[in-house]
Length: 391
Image 1 (tube, rainbow, N blue to C red):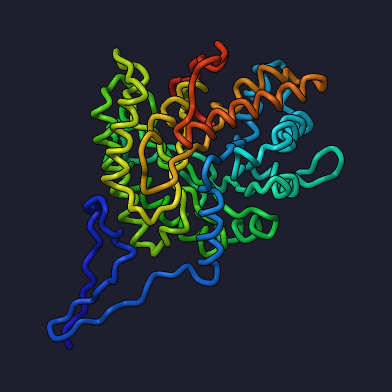
Image 2 (image 1 turned 180 degrees about the vertical axis):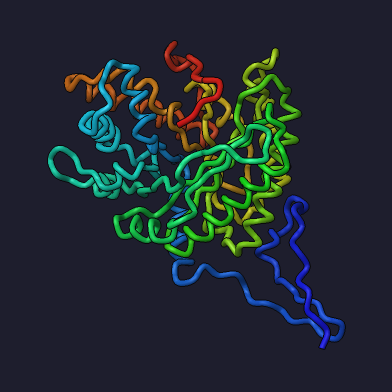
């Protein structure tokens, strides 16, 4: 009997066509054709799709507060606070108990410590989020480590034991997950680093879906470098082609994922800055070439942009219709003003929560394409790029 061959999915497709994992996959043999069934994610498929749709809802985005304890300590140190569990809890309580936050925020990515914490009154943070109709999420990767054989590049660890961790996080109330890996343009990037990033994200996504968590797929293309925007576009297209190739190889359901890409910008040290309109043009060009419309939401990271810059760029991308919900998953670009306002003082909590609502509302308007920078503070305009930033 002739051997059966399964043709590998291409890493590219024409914008507007159905994604490869949504087409019927055909096994080829000399005398017959055998059609395979649709890809499923087991018993969680319907829930995954509903969770992703809920997060990708109009005028809302994600609050990312999944910094490791060490990185959270750096944030606290910037306002003169010691890095203790009590101080971390106080800060995250400030954020997660902000009244009416759910009007602008649909999901919150938590660090493991926060997922299991409660307020000082004994109320679980997960329950605080649910009351505001905000989906609890969880960072599941174990951080970046050097990638042997590469050009001083990194890979993301954490696949070992991931299934059991995801199952436990689901029991605790998490409904989506985040895995961040990075690609560095000044380092090449090497083919090895791109393939490792794509494969790791795909394996994580399949494992997360198998345990009921919507995976956020995040290959961050770092801002570091003096390259022009055209080089960023070239690298972004290569990375996302690889990512979707391996997502399809791992039978990931595209309707049950969210993406967290970098915006396509010049390197942070490039001599010329790009306008929000230019950034929107290049970013949407990349997305239309590489991301199938089956994906419900594109939740951009801010990557060291100023609060106002990140909001202006998001607003520019929502000036016309897109096949996906184009929104935000910001950390520093939502929290910088909050920290400066709070200063670790109980009497400043209410003012700090108002500062969070100001930034959340601004990005909500940007998601709807209605944001204006008129009246923004000097603090919102302050850049936050740090060369070689880690967290």
